[in-house]
Image (tube, rainbow, N blue to C red; front, side):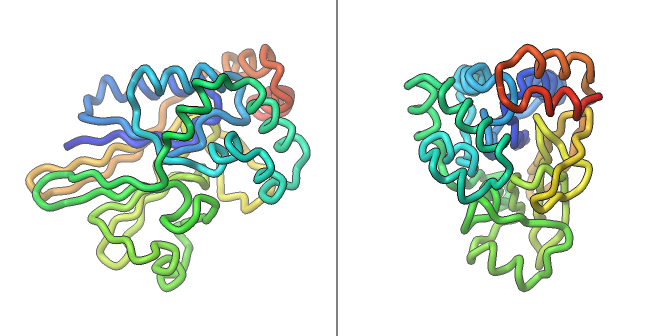
Length: 242
């Protein structure tokens, strides 16, 4: 069983298409999205339509919840441009888009074969706004996992790729398709990297492997897409890809 994990697309159509092309070359049995699909980037409705067409199972991220409950963003983001971008995205979505987001699930389990299992979430199993990091102390991490266990545990949210062991389990963050961060920001302004990220988790007869992938992007194309959008984040994204 080969599963491609994508996460934190954030409305970046160019990046998603590049990642899906890479996944097609790799060959997988299933693609799963770990959430934060539409907001902040220039093409929210296109991203949702692409995932719909794929029939891609999707975990609900905090930004997905903002589309269903826009008031939640005010308790999460203190930067006005982020709040404005979230509200712009919400106004762009159709009723079909919102119904699609309502069908997103908080967690998911996938058998990898040979008794190996994959457990998926967005931030952590107990909260889609918690940050699981390579540096999170083991006891604190155990609390965040909230009693869940699997051969491989995977979540997104931080926009930072990661692979670590925790008490015998592998913990994976595939990184961000649409807005990969150079380092963990913890609320600070991020430095975006000009590539797209994803991961492949493979199970074969009880053997398990994890590969982190990075797909190079054309910074000029990313700038043009951001500049052509009416998203309040557009100018900031153009500057970020300079």
